[in-house]
Image 1 (cartoon, one colour):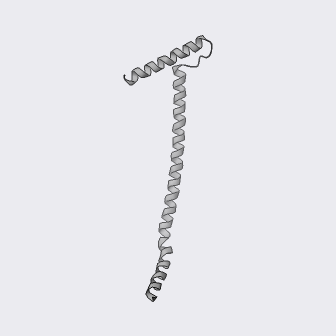
Image 2: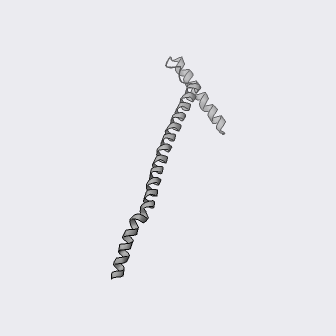
Image 3: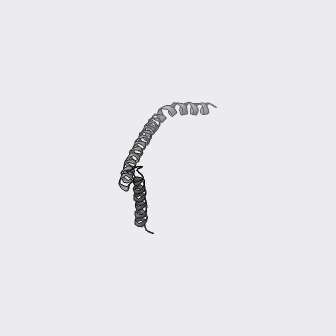
Length: 93
């Protein structure tokens, strides 16, 4: 079966359920249009959440890159004196 046939069968099932519930006076809000609207709203909500997560990840990545760059730029200033003392200590032995 192709996707379109399955989709049509599911939508027809939703319509039948909505019609039966409406006959019993339970609700008139179960139909394909309301379900489509709900799914579209939830899709937008999830896209917004995903964008928010991506922004937080990119922010943390930027912070880590900044710290890494600072460490790399200060490495020579920190390691140079230590290495010179080690070399002097080795030479004296």
